Length: 429
Ligand code: AMP
Ligand code: GLY
Figure 1 (cartoon, rainbow, N blue to C red):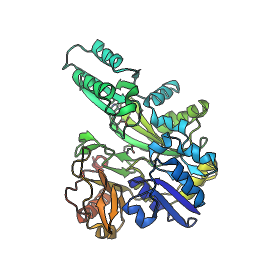
Figure 2 (spheres, rainbow, N blue to C red):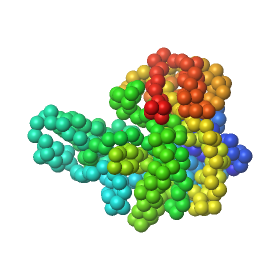
Figure 3 (spheres, helix red, strand yellow):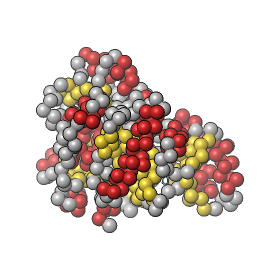
Figure 4 (cartoon, rainbow, N blue to C red):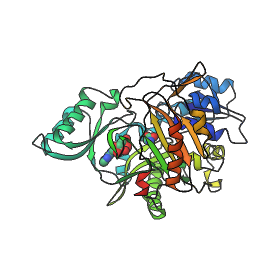
């Protein structure tokens, strides 16, 4: 069969790499893809938000399965529009994608379904939100323990963790007045700051059956020791020992099952990847957010370990027969993904710097270099984004996987390249 993957990041390269290994697949296309997907699949120069062009391509090329990687086209209803013309597509509908597209919708659903999450208030204006903070804290330097969030999609940047009254007021101003995140700031949330370790639990569901994947841990802050500004994710590893079997059962029972039921009850049945961002607090696991797609970079170490044919899983989800799918098979070995980034990221950065050493890095045993922000330029691979590569490795232990990944990182060079040096250390502590 022919498969089309929509997106251009590290997640999409991992999907293309894994899907092209399926004996049932003849051709994999990626729209628009990157320099890495050009090696493992065929790139199609269509933007991931260009719905008419994506639909036309899928029809003309008799694509039998479309996999939508990023959140923006999901929230924009690409799945609905494709299904309306009879294209088989993996991912949630527009209304179901609201779980990620609107934090207000998500928090209200969690509240109604009695799913553990931080206590919160929603606001329709910056003034209302500022008044709420001012009524509770009087001095600018008063310590506060709140997180201010823009309602809509903001590439992971619309969440501001605050420690003082002035920081909270500044965050409200950035979201509601200065409109740093555009229309995403039409509504705001102020919620309680939770303390604990974070983990990502991803599950695949057809709206009835839930198949949980091994837990992973992302590293959102830019620098070592979880310092610096938040990013899209600087690395991940899987499985994480901070979620044992008992904790996983609790997360399934208290979070995943009730969410899938609540979505069904509210006539927004969810099918696709349900990604719970969790804080493991002293009072148990609490939901920070939901994503409606594979995490990036979590997808890379997850797929590195998956032995089952991914196409079987995706098709069973689309066809609503996940309950018939045999248990998933995983490589016993843990995996880690180290993100190499452009100088300046997550702030502004230059593009077009030539990357060398990729072939040598890929030759290292149990290593796969997934491309994220790269592009082909006259046969050269050049940087084209903030997060450039996801160097991913398997190992007999987490420390061994870490050693393999960083050995490969050392082979790769471009001016200004950098990465965190402590990916997976939380597992070793
Ligand atoms: P989100 O996009 O909602 O996952 O938020 C991005 C990051 O902000 C999370 O990965 C956490 O590190 C942090 N964060 C979000 N909500 C909270 C909260 N209630 N308490 C503490 N940290 C939070
Ligand atoms: N790794 C976080 C995300 O995909 O949103």
